[in-house]
Amino acid sequence: MTTSEQTPAVSVVDARTVLAEITEMLRTVLDEYGLDDTEITMESRFTEDLELESIDLVTLAGELEARYGRQVNFAEFVADLELGEIIGLTVGRLVEYVVRCLNAEGS
Amino acid sequence: MAMIRTADGPDGITLHVQRLAPPDGRPPTATAVLLHGLLTDSLASYYFTVAPALAAAGIDVVMYDHRGHGRSERPCADYRLADFVRDLERLLDRLEITGPVHLVGNCFGGTVAFEYAVRHPDRVAGVSLIESNPATESWAKEIADIFRRLVTELVEHEAEALAWVNANEGGHTARLAKSAARLMRSTSIATDVPASRVLSEEQVRSVHCPVLAVYGSDSELAGQTWRLESLVPGTRSIVLPGQGHSVLAEAPGLVLDLLLSGIREPGGTPPVPVPAEGDAR
Image 1 (cartoon, each protein chain N blue to C red):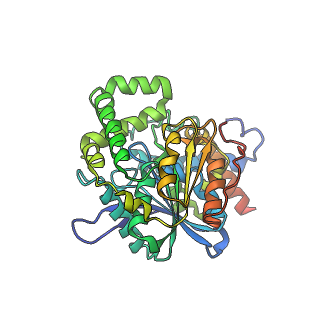
Image 2 (image 1 turned 135 degrees about the vertical axis):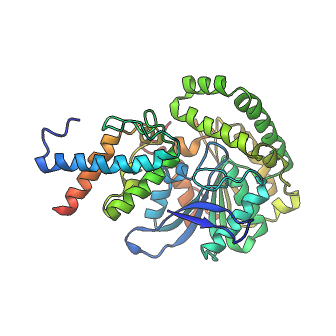
Image 3 (image 1 turned 180 degrees about the vertical axis):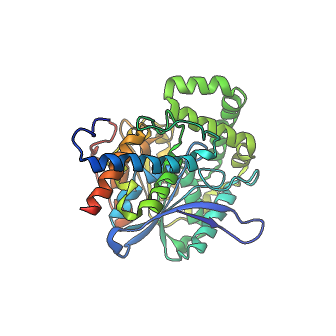
């Protein structure tokens, strides 16, 4: 992670919280595959490391909306990405996006 | 997200549905139902490509996973074309979508869409086929060949096949292939789809709504555009140069422009495809 140097301390805490929350959501999604002991970090890639299929990312988008409401729009996040890039996404990039959305809402 | 039961009783099925409304509560100008293809496909192919932009353009977008696919229920039998068409009929009823809709179908999804248009001419405003053909006799023969090959190469020699896909097409495709193998092993899809009742020439000809057919020039289907054009005079075929069968995933920008033109101006002249940024060339 390279964001910690420039972001205010509060965001660092938020990133950790958000990572914990997204980890929980991923456990729900991964549960079906019996991969619930897989370690999830900021560097984990959704498909290469966590073995998610693209439809699982749709489920994750639903979990994100349920937790954060419309402020975090996964569809918007991925709108500018090619399918290949979406497949290569890391958990960290999603965490950063969620933190950015939540901070924007608070400011 | 919603899980919707298509009918009460044992012949109903639970389908995973995603619906995107135009932003800011604007009333939609049209309703588009997006149908995905077989085996490795799911509504994610739309969710992560054209669906958000269609909604942003003011369209009510309905996507769902076909039976056996994605997050929808997976019965062990009943995978003939008619079963998929009945799912669409019942789903639209459950969603209380009664007005004419635009059907967009990728590969087999287009085959479902076309058959729905044959059966319900008053409920369809237009059909957009992406790398897809109606269920004619030649379609049935081709799909039977494809399934025969898949069963021999993927299901019966899964380990070797997946290793090859992993090395040549990457981990995500290998994972999708593994899911496809599981679907073929655990259900009757491989025998059911090719055994589907096909449309007569007369039925194909009966479609009067505007039909837009998009193909990739490198795909085997691109050489067959004359078939559909000769049967359905209202068909406009577009062949996208340098694209293959997965044109929706590879060039979503081009496909989006064509779909928007087909939905906004059914039967109008489609735009000359200009590769958008992010589209594979």
